[in-house]
Image 1 (cartoon, one colour):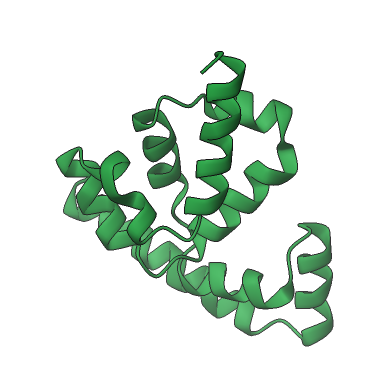
Image 2: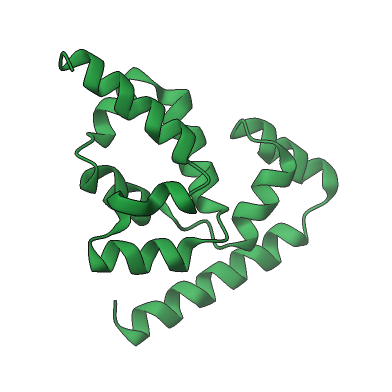
Length: 130
């Protein structure tokens, strides 16, 4: 990612956070209901810039999982994975591990989605007859 893209993303995230924080509590609660997330989680996602989608996609791919299949079979689980990833404090560690190609080996040690991803991997293995 270029420096200009990084700065543009940072600026957009800060602008969105400022706008979100200027909403009344009723408006924030309504948005949280609309996206089916607890208000605290929505606030955390906005605070973190709502990113993490790329890291989640890369991790699932590195683990040999089909993101589209998960979304079709378990839309609520996929939404929860995305929301948890978007509000994660370990994104920089995740990103480094993805760049090194080591995320699949050690995501369980830091990823807040590890338990859910492990359950999906077990389900995938059972389907494959393992």
